Image (cartoon, rainbow over all chains, first blue to last red; front, side, top):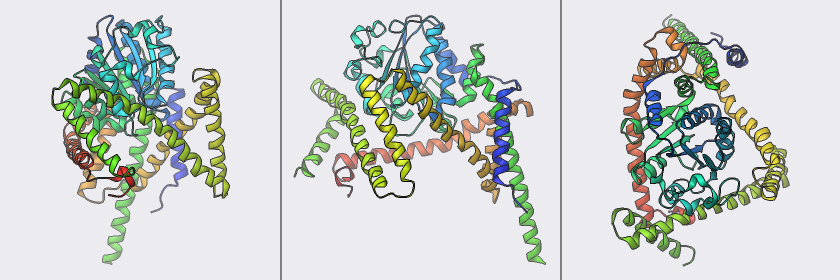
Length: 275
Length: 207
């Protein structure tokens, strides 16, 4: 049986992704337990607590993790938490800068309520180093201001000075992978850790949630949209879920068509062989 | 001596010190371990320099010998130079650096990542076949998770997200734990081999 030309499949995917982005269907969506649990962890943060957020992703994962970062920042700002942004990959600080603009929009002041410390080298070794002695790794922020002159960092000497550490992580790449954060932050320092990962990283990160080694886990765009729903602040992730729904439906339809043609071909071959 | 014995002796010394420092409560060991851990980000930062030198050597050779697609190497040199000049000269917070990032690097990287959706769709049609019972089971569970992770799944059945979550929480988790435990044992074994000097690939590329 003749197969579908790949170019037709490419055009089909382009259309089903583009149309819902321009005209969203507004499909209803329930909030799953892992997202509700993560929300509850952030909701326990007290005013004045300091939370570290690590932008451990590059451009390819921004579409999934960027909306999560924005939602977490809004939630933390509502809780009046102090936020310290870091990155274990060199691309991260630029994404942190973009996300932190959300805080400026909410009236938070750079240096007093939040700070971007930029990239720290060394991956897992880097995490271990600042977890024990924060200022041995971070001497100045992304804007070159010495850490001693930044009010939000007053009293921060080690990982245990943070009420919560969140890594938004793109996974393998030789830098601070999720496993490294679990080993150095939860196991070695006993500091509450939560992770936000891309959908492809979800299955291999989930065992850490079930074992209690991480306090919360957000997986991909779906979790981002669910978090926006919990915050009652629908954003880009909510809009993109319709596009993802349509793309998944088309891919499933293609798999069904592919298997039906495969089974029919096999049946015809068997018939031909027996005749 | 300087090429093999000294680096090997350093590996053994530092490796044992870091391991003992974690398990044995001796303040002197802690401060030594802490100092060495603090050096690591600094040492690893030099990888950026060696990586850049390697990149220049490989792509420089490509341009000199006019290998197929050599002009891509030239594009790399132009943007490498632009990023280094702007970054070192004016800093990473100036509009010119942001332009290189926001208008060139991010759109290019996002396009590369976005293109995988087209290839996944095409490949799933051509290759994702129920040829036997195992692949049929994989196909059905993947289909259920794909449906359950998007709102259209709830449109099909309100139970769909719970079914997807169950697949992720029970059968998928069991498999992942096997991978994690095996990888962990392998990691410990590799670390021990390196610390005691059996694995010497970091010294010369040969064991």
